[in-house]
Amino acid sequence: MTDRIVSWHANPSKPRYVPLAGAVDAHCHVFGPMAEFPFSAKAKYLPGDAGPDMLFALRDNLGFSRNVIVQASCHGTNNDATLNAIAKSNGKARGVAVVDPAISEAELAALHEGGIRGVRFNFLKRLVDDAPKDKFIEVASRLPAGWHVVIYFEADILEELRPFMDAIPVPLVIDHMGRPDVTQGPDGADMKAFRSLLDNREDIWFKATCPDRLDAIKDGGAGDPWDAFASAVAPLVADYSDCVLWGTDWPHPNMETEIPDDGHIVDMIPRIAPTAALQRKLLIDNPMRLYWPEELG
Ligand code: 0GY
Image (cartoon, rainbow, N blue to C red):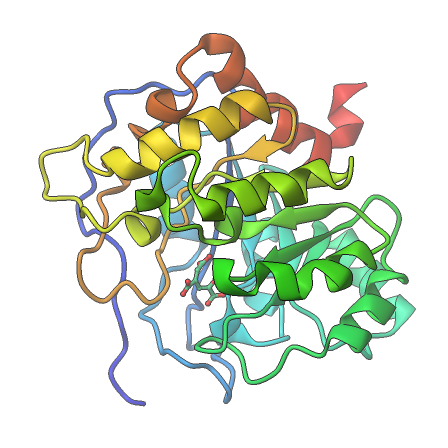
């Protein structure tokens, strides 16, 4: 593995949609910079540098105010790159870590101090070597107060993972809706299974993210692509408006071709959340409750 993948758009367009003041990009990552924060020896891809300065410039260009930085698999369980970005954000970023399940209480407390508010369990075989459910459940029971667990899986293992998810004793956040096949439409089997998961517990959240990963009709450059994503996801956002989050997924790990224009990604927001009330929940109220609850008074 020698070639570094540049997975982000070099010159994203200015979105037509203007987010509400205070909007949160609740799913993004940083890569390195590698000279300061080397990638894990177990990384399945080797990205180009996409550090905090780039992230915050994009945030400002897209009209967002805050970021939730999710530790990407290429950095393994060393969260220093994520912590560095949070530290440079002037309080405008918080994060989700990936940890060795044997992590000590003192190390968890240090992550909390650094702005981490959750841990991510990744079940994608192309990204991680193993996902030890028993150890994940054990560490989930020792997380600092107010933290949650983020789970990344694909639709074909949703049913298999349900007992595991039921055993997690803190709130759950599901990345990219568990990657449903959006071409099945809003009433397709994948969306039905996902709704059943959401109906199963009170403390579950999800990210209505990644049209570029989930919709086969790619961004042709003209804007307003991803029709299947919009029609499958808009009803979900409407029906579960108090537990949905949104994010760019910048720098789009692993997207070697068909790299999405972040301006077009932002322009999906009014297509999945057409009213100002829904947009406020999606971009401000919900992420603030999870990541900056102390600012809500
Ligand atoms: C995402 C999706 C992906 C990658 C990662 O941690 C990661 O490397 O999350 C993916 O390749 O689908 O959420 O960024």
